[in-house]
Structure formats: structure tokens, C-alpha cells
Amino acid sequence: MYDRLCYSVAIRTLGKAGVAYETLINCLKKQTIPPQKIVVYLAEGYIPPVKVADEEIVLCKKGMSHQRALPYDEIETELILLCDDDVYFAEDSVEKMLTAMVAEDADCVSANVFPNQDMRLRQKVLKGIFYGELPSFRKKFAFRIRKSSSYSYCNNPREVMESQSCAGPCMLIKKSVNNSLDYQDELWLDQFPYTSGQDQIFAYKLYRYGYKLCIHYTAGVIHLDCRTGHIKDEVLADFNKRKIKYLEWYRSIYEPGTGMQKFLAVIGYYSYWIWLFGLSLINILPGRRRYKIGNSIRALSEARKHVMSPEFAEIPKWRVKR
Image (cartoon, rainbow, N blue to C red; front, side, top):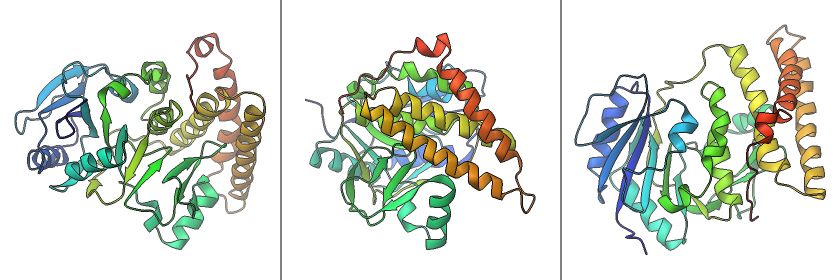
């Protein structure tokens, strides 16, 4: 049995967060339940951040997925707070997450740093139309992954809810659970510059492997979002997002399925693709973002070829339990 009040912190960084990194370390040192150890995992080739306290800096391979797939050998506690380098914590944030983990018998607790439920109606409508991110009024899951690989979110959540997915900037997880997810099999994600897919792949894999993931809505955690790794090329970013969406769908929904599950997965994804392609056609009329049409077709074509490649075929399939 692990010590429910003893945890360490693992921070992923490129060393570019500046003041936000300093804020993070200071917040962690002021927690009502302080961490036993703070380890900063810095990607090779980047300048180490200026140390704020007694944090330990460890070099690791470059790549968001490489940094997430680490075994965290430098950490001895069973509980690890995984976080980005630009997160703000209220003084009792970790205490709330630890309490929720015990009360819910959870394997992982994530703070809700992107409050979809608080968006204005116009934002919710636009998100639903253009990204397939739909509000749900069911109370079973905070976030539910749909057959298209998009997600729905609870529109009126409780303080703590079970979930099928979560955002990646802040997660309290059991080390044994983290190391059992075979996340090293997902290093293919690092071929894409700053992919957003790696958060969902990690969280949904956690759920499908049979572990309990919970979202804490009032932990007081804020993502400052220094945007240190985002792509400035809008066309390339759009193409990558479309290609990743297919690979994400294939890897986490289609490939693990059998029979009817695969059929429903195909219906779900291609219905979503046709809808987005139709929206791309509408962009022609005002002459805006015409690149989306070409990206839709090219990304789907390249993604299909990608999953049929010998390299991708060699990647072990998910060992799903649900």
C-alpha cells in the first residue's frame, strides 16, 4: 500500500517557460502537503532553466512522448504529480487531488485546466460544429471519447468525476500504473511537431487498460500556457492535426476493436471526416482558408498509408480491458 500523502513531482520542460517555471516551483514548495522531491526532465539540446529551489534536473530524449514515456527511475514515491512547466497551483491543489484519489479509489486524478463547461453558448456551438467537441448532460463521465476520436464533455459536472480522457498539463498518477501503460509504444507521435494527440492517447489508454481516471474541477490549478512548442505555420499545424486525428482514431478505437466495434468506429470517423470536409468547402465562398480542403484529402491519404506501413504494423496493439 502506498503512502497516500507522499508524492513527488515530475516536470516536463524545454527550458523556455521563464517566469511561469519559477511560479510553478514556488507554488509546489508552498503546498499544504509538499512534495518529497521535484525532478525536472529537460529535453536534450535545450538550456536548463535557472534553478529556483532544490529541484533536480535530469536530461532526457527530445520529444513530448519521449518525456512522457519515461520510467521515472529518479522518483521513489508511488504517487507522481506529472505536470508541464507552465502550471499554477493554489496552496491546497495537490491536497485536494490526493483526497480525491483516495475517496474515489482512483489510479489517476487530473485537474480540469480547460473548463469547457464554462464556455459561452456561442463558443460551445462553434466547438461542436468545427471540432466535434460536444456538451453532454449525462453524469457518468467528465469526458467521453466518441467513435470519431473526438470527445464530449459534461456540461454540468460534479466536483470530481470519472473520465475517459483528460488534459495533460497536470496529472497525479500512480507510478506503477504509469509504467504499465506501454507508452513507449506511442513514440511515433514525436514525428509530429508538438502534437496535441499525445494527451488523449495517454489518458484514453489509461482508461481502456482498465484503470480509473478522475477529473477534479475545483482543484485550483491553472494552465498558464506559455506555448513554447506550438507550430507557427498555420497550414502545417492544420495538416498535422488532421493526420494525427486519423492515427489517433486508428490506434485507440479502430485497431483494438473487433467485428461490430470496428464497423461502428469506421462509421463514426468517416461521418466526422465528411462533415469537416463539407465545412472546408464552405471556406471557399469567402476565400478563406482554402488550404483546409487539400489538407483534408492529403492528410487522410497519408494517414491511411502510414498505418499500413511495416513500421506502424510492428507497433504492439493496445491490451484493452474495456
